[in-house]
Image: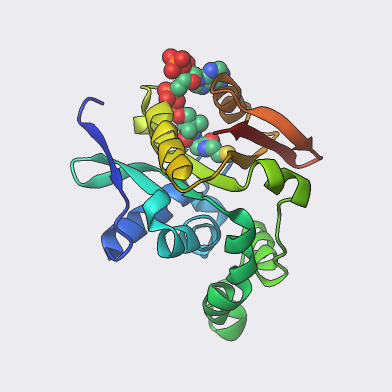
Length: 207
Ligand SMILES: CC(C)(COP(=O)(O)OP(=O)(O)OC[C@H]1O[C@@H](n2cnc3c(N)ncnc32)[C@H](O)[C@@H]1OP(=O)(O)O)[C@@H](O)C(=O)NCCC(=O)NCCS
């Protein structure tokens, strides 16, 4: 695609927010479309998009095709502070909207239940020794139509600049072992393995 541009996400624009939630869902199965796996389509976005664009819009960038977002990178410069505040600033409103509180809600899928339990029993994810050197973290997702043309690199380098300007010395991210294509991308960009368990890898890069 030739008409792709990078711009900041517009946190107050409901269309932008909806588009980013949609991208999150459509890349939520290890990079593939997870739409059919959820009856609650906003759950993944509530974890991986909502608090980023609300609390750190300066570090949230979209790839736009015309005005339509087709990809994003979302970052925070200080993961510890971000995660410390989520239990009071973000999770209560997400939990209040969960279907447990709405008895007439549709039947839940296995992934609905998985992500709901991640939300209701949420705990800070990053280890202290990782945060010391790699305090920032990020999520990047491009729709298939925007992949493979260099926009992932441009987007993540745009975020690196904004994280550096905010004083972050390093950035980390989590990636599933079932997403080898993303792992290849991150390694190609200079990320190295900081930690590994059955679910996946924590990768990091100095800024
Ligand atoms: C992973 C993703 C962000 C990469 O973005 P992209 O636009 O497809 O990648 P780019 O075209 O910008 O590639 C940038 C560079 O990485 C290289 N690269 C990309 N994938 C690679 C791979 N699997 N192995 C090795 N190198 C890879 C490219 O060759 C390119 O190299 P160059 O810049 O030196 O020429 C994108 O494909 C995506 O969003 N996938 C689906 C969602 C997802 O899996 N997100 C990550 C969740 S943790």
